Every structure is written in structure tokens, then in C-alpha cells.
Image (cartoon, rainbow, N blue to C red; front, side, top):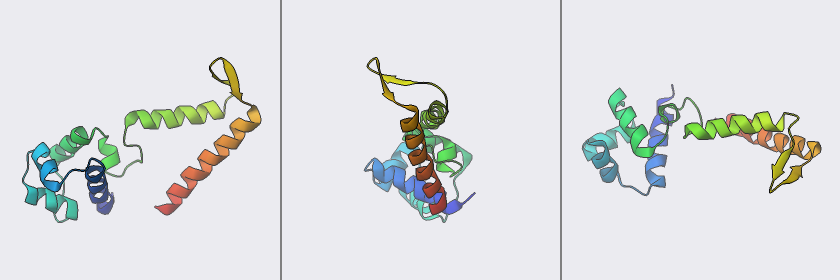
Length: 123
């Protein structure tokens, strides 16, 4: 487990909410100095703090720990379902009209696969 990813994710999640360290610390029930140490990596998270962070940010603990790139459990399922859909014989409809041909499904599958391959390469 890469500790740097954990700290980066906490900071990114906090900044997306436009919260200060003080505000996050209050929500966590810890001091600002403790929150600062967690974010700068000089103090490791406890299991209890990980659970609190997951609840405060409404993300999975696996995401915070860097074990996957899906902050929300439902996002992982959507990506998985999309992969199945694009690789199946299903015809995709919207508003009672078929919107993607087999060729178009293969095209979008290629775009999505390429996107995730690039993201993995960046790590």
C-alpha cells in the first residue's frame, strides 16, 4: 500500500469539498494538528479514522487506501456493467430508439479501454 496515495487522496477529497483542515478535523473529531500530520504523512491513519473518513467523504475505504480508483461503490459497478454491455450482443436503446450499432459499441469500448490503460500507465 502506497502511503503517499493515501495522503494525496485525503487532501484531494478535502479540497473537492472546499474544506479547510480545521473543518475536516472537526468532522472527524480530531485536532487540526492531528489532521495536518495525517495529511502530510507524519502520522498514519488508524482503522477508526479510516472508517470516519470514508463516512465523512462518502467514499469507500479501498479508494482512500489506493486499492482501487472507484471512490463510490456504485461507480465500480457502473464501469463493470458498461464493459459487459459493450462486449455483449445487447442492443443499446435510449428513448425507445437503438442508439449504438455493433460497430459503434466496439468504438466506444476502445475509447474506454484506452482511457483506463492510460490511467494505469500514469500510476
